[in-house]
Image 1 (cartoon, one colour):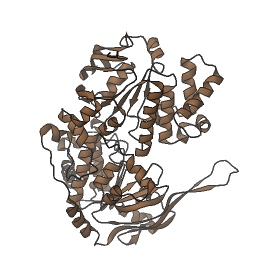
Image 2 (tube, rainbow, N blue to C red):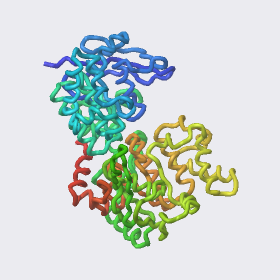
Image 3 (cartoon, rainbow, N blue to C red):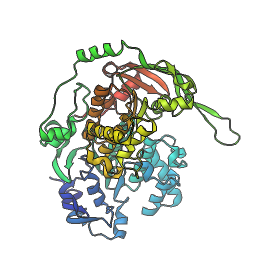
Image 4 (tube, rainbow, N blue to C red):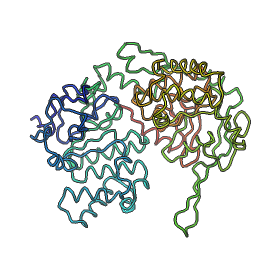
Length: 559
């Protein structure tokens, strides 16, 4: 007998002002099941889920039509008080960014305690015990310590577990998880996915799991909905969608992610699938070998020798200062035209090492030789000149751009600082050429950062970096926050610019599939030390260390 759905959405349409963002959306969620909703930014997956809980911004949004039926009750039109009884109690939500969802001025325990006291009849002592029990249930280490800790005192993965504990505190019927693992390391992501599946089996709740990563959906969901531009383009059980996708958009989501088996010269994008312009040339092992022979016959561009970065921590007036080595005796060589992948979990020291190379944070020991010169001993005037040669592409391009300066001016700014070209007219001509190279147009010159999408902003960040024609670029998690197909566009662009200008990259990321695709050599870091260093393909095919194997095993593989 067909089970009655616990949630039924029919013909839902939503507008922001005059702009229709959700078009006649219809789907149902069965009891004790996990439904995956997949799509890129702007596809409407989060908006439609916020509508379930009545969390759409009141002044600018409007539900034009449709019904959201939860256990025979239409949630559209309920009063704020009625919705308050459902939120957190019957339907709970985990958001993408736990740091901005948790109150920084309250301890983690108090935040969960508040929910239990609000929605249940428990005594305070009872609620405290239940909170600690919840922290144990979501596998938080030392739950008593986390209970008394503030959000900034625990790791990203632990913050997300606190959010899950909050969400399941009242044993809801439905849990909506909105991109709950996007910013997390692959190993932490795997743990969170396993935790959600375990909790779902134990509590028999239903889960709506929202992400832009289809490979991830395949590891957790029973059925899947694919959304594109506010509409459902495909839905069905997870195996049939994965094995036999019908819509080109679904095919693109599956194939835009770099493969761990073959290395395409150019990654396919959404537009390639929609316009039937897919390129299938692969980089052969012979081509890769020949390229590496040419690369490694030159002198190294950068040589890191026994580099250390030590931090001194002091807590309390009478406590002895403690030292912590974020980077511990690291040595490697980087050759001109090479891409060195740098991977490891959060806190392994990869960004600290990048900052030491950039001279943004001085190493406490060791040598950093750039073109044979130890840059750790250079005076500040010489380091300023060096900034032209060694540049960085940041993870979040929006926060690294001035919101009050048009992007053309922002790209010209470093040219002026380093006295490149003879006039602003000449600089502008070069900026227009760079904009064209990164896939933007002349029309974008006078626009401001807020007028661009995430992928376009990352292109602007890249344009600003390459404006100085540097030799070495540190890419610090520069694609981790992007949608799968936008990520493919940016990776293609970085490879194209590398071929055109002969750039050398240090590519820092926690996404191992991306790092393998981009890298010649791969450096795996763990607790400040080098765990493994070799050709990227050799490490992936035959990791020598258990830590590396754990990282590789945690990559979502798809079906």
